[in-house]
Length: 410
Image (tube, rainbow, N blue to C red; front, side, top):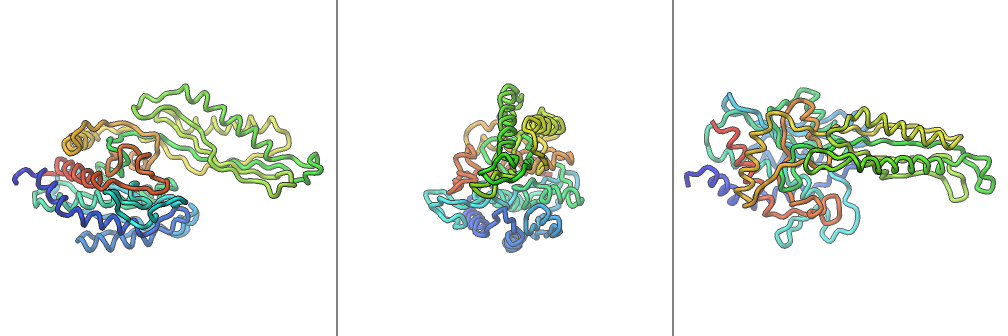
C-alpha cells in the first residue's frame, strides 16, 4: 500500500475502536455550562492524551475572570507538534463546554451508550466528537513517518457557550498561540467559511410595586416591558427583508429568550428583565446594530410614562468573514470530503455563531469542518438524546487527516 491517503484511512480504521472509546470517556465527564465547572474535563482529557504520547499544556484561566463570566473553572489545553521549518502552523480547535442536558433522554446524557451505530451523550455531536476527530487525524498523519513541514496544534477550549472570550479568545489575547490556519469543530457535512454574529443584551424595566387592589399607586413594569417587546419583535418584519449574500445565511433576526419579573400574583410588578438575542448577518455593522436596538428600546419605553430602563450588553460576537488565505484549506477539505463521502462537499455560511470568529479577528484564515451529521437538527444537538453517527466520525477523521497531509507534506 503505497498511496499515503490509503495508509491514513487504513490506520484510522485499525484504531477506530480506540477513537470511539476516547470519545466515550470525554462524554462521561460532564461539562454543563452553566454552571461551567470545566477544569475537571480538561484534566481528564490531558490524561487520555498523555496515554497516547501527546503532552497537553494546561492553561488555567484566572478564577476572577471565570467567575465574572458566571462560570466556575476553565483550563484550556494546547498540544503542540513541530515539524520541519517552512510550512504553516495549523490549529485544530474544538470546545468541551455544553449546555445542560435537560429532560427526556432515553440514553443517559453522560453515558456514551452506543446503539445502532450511534454514540449518545451531551456533546457527542457538538463538539467533543472533534476532540476525537482531530486527535486521531494528528496521530494518523504522524503514523506515516513522512517528513512534514510546519506544525500542528490541538486547541481544546471551554468557553464556547458563553462566547469564547475565555477559551480561544484568552489563548490568543495572551499570546499563547497564533496559528497560520485553523480547522474548527464542525456540525455538518459542509465546509463552513462564514457565520452570523450575535448581540445579546439584558434589558431591565423598572416600575413601582403596588398592591393589585390599588394599581394606580404603582407603575407596572410588565406593561412597560410589553411595549418594549412589541417594538423589538416588530423589527423582525424589517429584518426579514434584508438578505445576506453568503450562501447558507438568510436574514437578521431578533429573539427574546428569557423573561423574569414580578413578586406575586397580587402585586403590580416593579421590575421585569428581558434577555434578547439579535443575530447579525456578515454584512451588518455590529456597532450600528447595537445602536438600533438601544434606540428601539428607548423609543418604546418613552411611550409608557413612569418606567426606567437599564440595558446591559451580555455578548457581542462578531460575524466570521472568509479571510484570504483559506482557499487551500477549504479546497483540500472539499476534495477529500468528496473522495471519502462519495458526494460533492459544498462550502457555505451558517446562521450559528462560533469561536472561530475570534481566530479571524487575529488574522487566522479558517474553515469549520469535523464530525457531524448533515444538519445540526439530525444530531439532536442541544436537545435530548444528542448523538453521533460513528461512521461520520470515522469519515471526518479521514478527511481531516488527508487534508493535513496535503498542507504539511514536505
